[in-house]
Length: 288
Image (cartoon, rainbow, N blue to C red; front, side):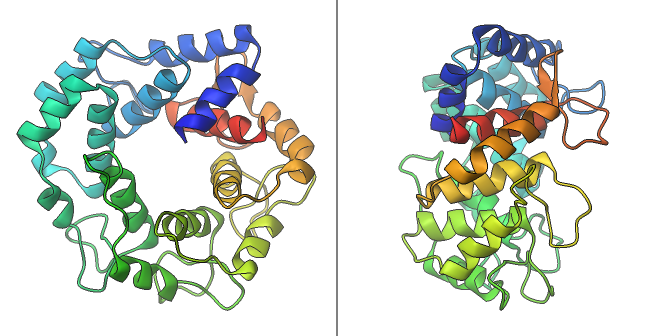
């Protein structure tokens, strides 16, 4: 992901990159965190903003971000998504972040979300593990030193979520796959150096209609940026040539661009935020 963000920074016109940087920087508020879709700081959106800015060679002020992580957020009370976001932000801070991780975080904290079924729950109260939870655990564990790859039982859980058509559902009991979940499963398998069946790659490619972006499901009425970015990321990681998808995907991503410096999530989304701006830049980086 970092490499794709950097590639987008080299590919996009300097004026566009500067607008993205300015838009994201403007989301940082007094406590050092970044706004989400409200007026207050949000750890989840802070991770997207900080990661995009770092990839575009304009990292956020380290002192302000460190103050936010150390003073405004208690990692012991976070769910898995926000804990992973906290870890990623700390990792981006380099030596200061490493000290923060060593002082306040152990691998056991991530382990609290592990389920005996092999995957990870997003919250301790969840009724079971999910592919998304397992992906977020991987996302966090790659930031630790040394990085920790997916465990064998987590991969077995992920494989149990594959549907007969090649798509992956978020949990084994769900009937159909979705594009973001299938992309997450592909990344987990790839990081564990496990094979990905051709049917899964075909299923993922088929979510792009060749005329715009990627659709979340076979029946989704419109494409969306999350599905487009995650599909392109997973396909690129597996070495799939994206040339046939390039023109239509770039046109679609461009249709979601706002001159203020951010990206909308889909054609009907009126709000700009750090998350979808990250996905827009990530997708462009892979296509570049």
